[in-house]
Amino acid sequence: MILTRLCCISGIALIGLLLLWTPARAEEPAAEGLQAGVDSLVRQLSESMERNTLTTVAILDLVNLDLSVSNLGRYVTERSITALHKSGKFTVIERDLLERTLKKLNLTIQDLADPANIQLLARALNIQALVKGSVSDLGETVELNTRVVRAVDNAGAVVAVAQVSVRKDDQVAKLLGQAVLRRGATGAQPPTPTVPAGAQKEIKIDMGQGVVLEMVLIPAGEFDMGSPVMEANRKDNEQLHRVRISKPFYLGKYEVTQALWMVVMGENLSRFRNMKAPVMPVSWEDCQKFLARLNKMVEGGGFRLPTEAEWEYACRAGTQTAYSFGDDEEDLGEYAWYGANSGEQTQEVGKKKANAWGLYDMPGNVAEWCSDWYGKYEFTAGKVTVDPIGPGSGVARVLRGGSWHLPPNDCRCAKRAGYEPDTRKYNIYGFRVALDLK
Image 1 (cartoon, rainbow, N blue to C red):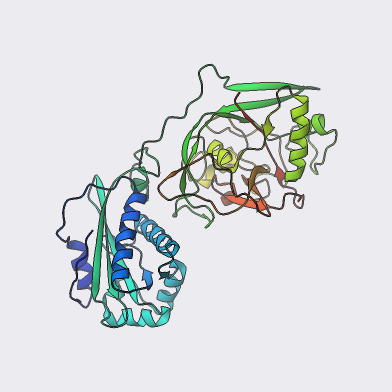
Image 2: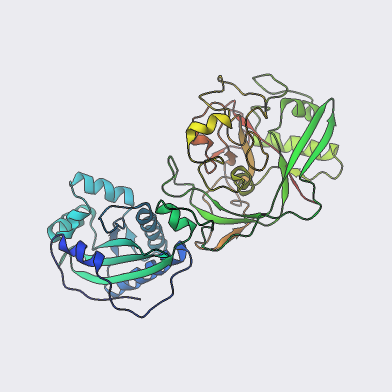
């Protein structure tokens, strides 16, 4: 831990000096994984602020040596704000409020080298302290440097400095805009997706009347669930966290079609009639009735909805980009029926490209019900969550994948939605079935 008292240095020289200055300290191994580095940084900041009885604080985005704000700097700042807030010991100003206030006061991060400007910000936000910081790319590692400065009395005086070295992994590299190193969000090399020897890669179940239920084997493995903070159009409910799917399972190659629904349920609820198109709109409760009947019709049963984690894992098919095919929404039309190309209705399944694991229409066509109650992700930072099943209760069930009616951002792998389980309000609700490997 580095806690060094410094004299106040006014003007832009303060930022320049502290960005280039590295305090003497005992050599410590680089943190393995960005979250571990953030945790160490937060621990140091927390201890220093407690020691100086500073309880109300704003945290600026960490900057590069050229004083620009990097994606990595924003990420570290956002995670630090969340961690300090969750500790219950501090009142931490939200980034959006801080940014709006800086804009209103016509101030930049560089302007906050001036104690008078720090006091101006302190009065506007009612804060006692300001946390500034920098990010230094040292090749195999990055260095995160932060300092706590007083914001009211003796404004600009640095009361503590915290510094952490983080080994560069794929998450850090991506946030820096560099080549990905093929590691997971926890910093550890994820296990290779696996399936038991002899397991069928695909199964086909003859349902009669020319209708076949086709399913694809999804391997066990790990992935980063949610979206990175800089992904275009991301929402606050997409917090990035590491998830392990511990067992392989089968998932419908296609969304449940009107033909399959008819064979099982004896009726067709769909507004857009086409036996090869997805059934819609069906409620989550309708899906449960379908699954109950399907399990009686097929020997062994066991059919269910996928969990939200299973759905996103299968949708990504080993990728960590906004879509399974990359980040460019211009390519979405090759893989999905959505608002711009659907003709304002559902289309036959399997007419677009499959993802890398052989699943069709994961984005677009119909939004797909998952088994989970909709709610905030529950996970421990820096740890792997194994086979999450969502909250124990709620008022809405999870829907994934966007639809024929929605724009590209709603078709992103991480995009989440939730609706009441009995609703058929919109003509976009459908599903695909999952089955445990036996």
